[in-house]
Length: 287
Image 1 (cartoon, one colour):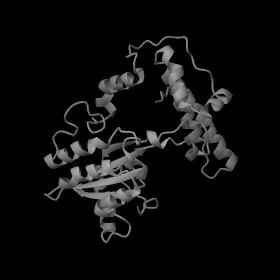
Image 2: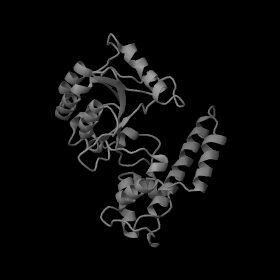
Image 3: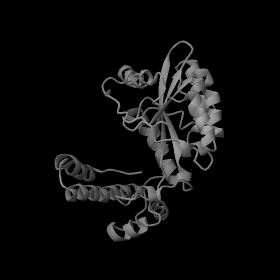
Image 4: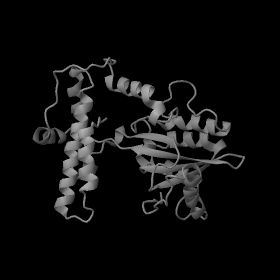
């Protein structure tokens, strides 16, 4: 979690927008990215100042594991462990408490309610939508916020999967199933795959198309969503995941592939015309 103040925002704008040369040489490209690395660390330190002083080292150590500690010693400023925070936060999990207070206070300004991923009761779906879609969202919520160590199918999923849910009335809704990749640290420009922590990966499900580069798509009748979720929960190897793809997946070789792929763009046109654009299928996989 980062906290951008105005000086950091200004430095980011002038470095990454005003003075950024898309056609610059390798040195310019590398220096720009390395400079933003320092800006990111500054935003992390801003956030840590909001946490209780005795918890800051723990969060920093979690963000910079393994080789990240060397980068932290080499390039970054030491954090402030002396000045207390002015916020009243839960001592057991101050970061989560801060995030929940932030959502409660400012959620109506710049964040939509997220009952699917942040379900805190018996009902894990959006109100005032088609009952068939409510049942589908209730079932799909079982896939969210669970680490891959307990939901093995995450290991088989790409980063951005689209779920196209069809009701018996002919209405369809599109959801983005995003794979949140865990890292031991993000302190280096290269070698990202060496710092993956796949056992800690989780899934986020959100209504709409949240990626310009869909990696795959499933087309699922609303009444079959519980069966789809159960199959996903039981898919502990590639063979079982293959069965899910065979039943609901839309591969490049699917006879109606172009209909389904273009329908994603049509859905964005219908639901968010201001932000609509042409989706790039260059990263679409044939699972």
